[in-house]
Length: 543
Image 1 (cartoon, rainbow, N blue to C red):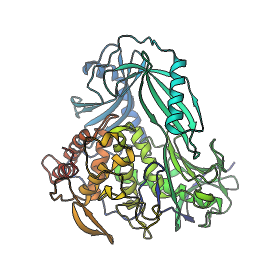
Image 2: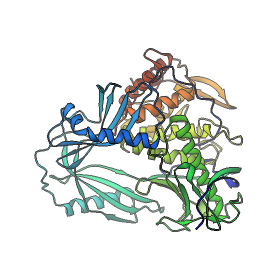
Image 3: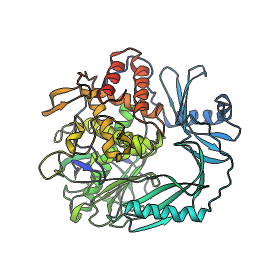
Image 4: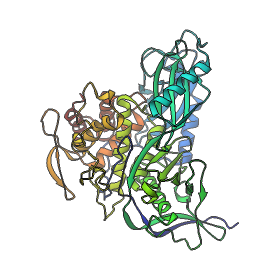
């Protein structure tokens, strides 16, 4: 077999202009971002190589027992290193998961911020509760927990089939007093063909359901021709495959209308892919592969993150999922993006914005792991909107300039209006402009409006204005004017907050604290950027 050679090839393909989640929205629009401005302080994250990051992880693992002792954790608590980020000033942010008596502690994650000399500066905890349970012996049998979880999943998802896996005993610490519980994963398929991996958390002593969330993040949309794009391909045998060795070995494969498996490799003899028409099977692959490449480049060039997990390894993309499947989704278990071909298999959902939004769910999972429910769920979804929009600006597409309108190309409403609006989210009829006591009870795709509105205000400011030919008019909760600091700075602040200061339980108030800390690290205390963050949050009623 001929050794694989990394290549960049110009091809003709389609790029879906926008995608919207079935139960939510995915950002729309591509455009050019202005050059990134360097921070004025030295708290910016270093661009770590995979080997340097691995070394930091090893160092943290070697000292995790001592760290647990210094934090005053109980004798039965242990730390598990998840991620390490190092800033230019030498500050290290080490993210840990936690176990108790060998059981995973859900909601027990924490971040230790260490100065250059090794002294602990501060600690960010998902819960301030003491993690301890009276006994690790459950009163409820695992079979009972599995049966209950399966019933919950079928009812909640309207699934046409569901299969409860063997429950795992855990300590639930994400809300209330830490409790011995079962985490049951119910694998199912929704009526529209979307796979589901629902986690149902059950009290191991009373059998009461404590929480539920789905691992799968979904989306849908329609396509639009985008012309020639560059792809990373590899020589293999007598032809080429869609394997991008320059981006961690990311692969794009063909499911050939099946709903499982890794898919079959696409091959091409002359390394010229697709026709720009959806009836050519390669065309969907072109867009998926291109979208993954742009997303990789965005995170690496703008934020110094090499790959979704920061470990230099590429994800994978699977196209042609199912029949007439109007959806796309990110799945952590396969570390992959999956795309359907749309209504009548004529509009593949392989858009750049789909990839950027959904793969950002993977970044969130690998870092803060914001629980997909309540206010943290809105922040999770908002994060994908924010970085999906930012990646599209980064792409510098001449045919679809960047904007803060979500879904403006698919005409999902049938009247030419966008799916969502970042400058005034409530214009979609369901999302919130500002935080209130009911925010946590909304679907994450509507509570995300608070995060999206904050990001717009921080980037562009309030009031009427025209940006790139699009007119906006962003209000504030208190009617006071907010001055924007620019999107380049806003996205860097959000990324630093997500990766260094947010935890699984972060709510909007904690997100304000996290972004203020991030802005202070990047631009110094009392800077215009810090004041801008504070003003933007006040502008959406988060104080």
